[in-house]
Image (cartoon, rainbow, N blue to C red; front, side):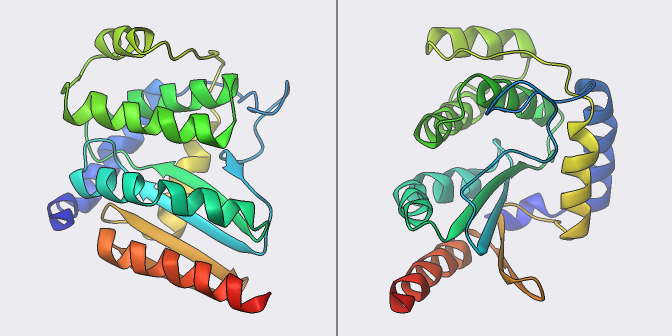
Length: 207
């Protein structure tokens, strides 16, 4: 299923870049305080870095996000993992979803709440088929999800850079950095699940 999000890869990313450049605007105020975002929001600070690349309109992305929710929480609880979600703009409206995800994180960075909001965004995209900003705003209000708006232009080069640096051309994709010179890419929900459970086992064996 995930393969249909591969093509046309270059065209999709270029379109996403153009859309993001118009959708995102200025410096970011971090979820953990007032100031400027220096990086894409992440949780945890352990030696292992998990970066999950998804699009809210991607069915397999929704499946792995839902399936791995408890596992990701458990990995963060070990104190050994840093987790980052990166929204990949494979659809025309995706940058709007990404913008409101960041707005929500800016208002409440609790990881449990963020995971809940991601589920609602997947629901909005795939069950409600919401494709306008106005409808998405109404849906978030309907679900009592609040957010804090900020001037977000600087997030685009950060997101674009991490997508480009990791050569992301399909969703879902997960990159796990085991060490500065040791990182692996996993594509598709099955590969990602196996990789995350393998990381959990590795951490348990270290104790």
